[in-house]
Length: 251
Image 1 (cartoon, helix red, strand yellow):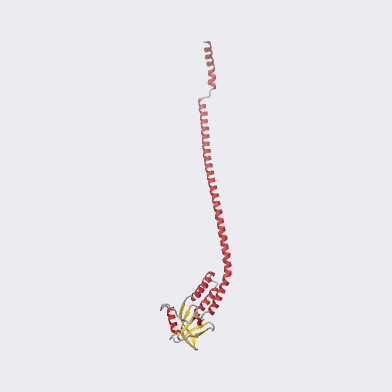
Image 2 (cartoon, one colour):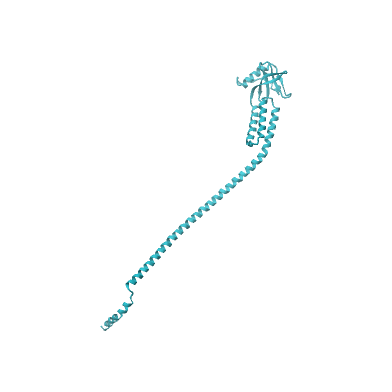
């Protein structure tokens, strides 16, 4: 009992001191509010940092993806550049080859036309005006600086093809020959490049070109009818048949 009374007295004596030492409620509330505010600010800064961290991470991922893409593009463009260098090298090679061909081809075409002119002059004397005009045309073409080399080459080849075709066909033309000292209109029958014959309009005279003497020689009148049939076949006026012509004499 005495002990309980003592404790009570002690409590009564300490109560004012404890009351004086306890902080007021407003101060506690202010401290608590300040702690909450600090915590909220810290949370906000953490959230901002977290957002910034995620943004930086996204940027890093984008940069890595871009870096991979750029590496891929660099490899591809390296291949493109190598291919283009090969193409350029090939073009340069072709350019040099074309320059070399041009240097060789231009004088070669001159030689070809010279040879063609000599060949025509030594060939059977058919279509003399036409063939001479063709040679003159080629001369003018080769001397024309405005013409491309390809066009000059085409014209020379075309002339060669025409001359080559003469040896593969037959034809009849009309021209005037000096026979027995008088100009006479005759019909010329050409058998490829093998032989050349003439026949007067009335069929009374016939002859052939003699290569050895370079002149026209008369044929026996028996060949007049044969030459007439040959001209009809050349003009497609009758069916083709075997004919007896003096080819050996024509040579």
